[in-house]
Figure 1: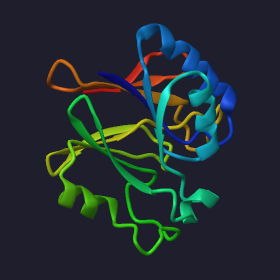
Figure 2: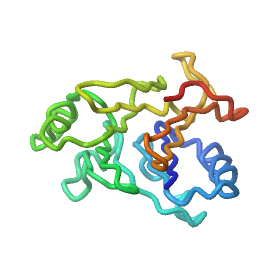
Figure 3: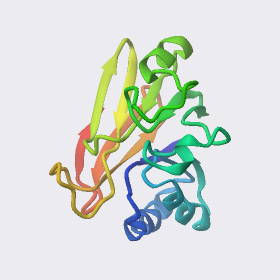
Figure 4: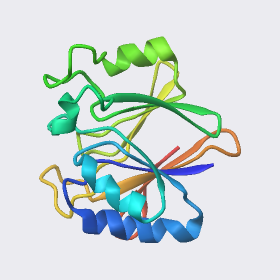
Length: 173
């Protein structure tokens, strides 16, 4: 199973739409949106994708108890924890656990997070932590707009973070 992961689109739905159009021919059906902005994922739903999402820490949804800020999911046998920030945040609700603590308890194969706008693939305590970067046209942190593709088959899982501009591989594992 192949999934795409995006984060930090910050209202730039034209970049979300561009990516949705690009992913369709390669057989992607599932897209994860890690917040900022929660409603940007509606573009993906309208394009026919199955979407899982969590809100960003500055979103009104983040304080809505009916919307989970941390979410456990499974993709093709891969257990995944979704969270906007990879660390605790001052806007967390009282019931929101530290993502690292939740990962230790739940033992997912992977944690998907955003917030920093910086793409990353790293291993912590035998769990892969993946940040797809951001989808803003310009960002003060200097990283280009990017997204992640995760292929759960064959084993081991293949992860690529690609540039939105030209699909150049930025990071892979």
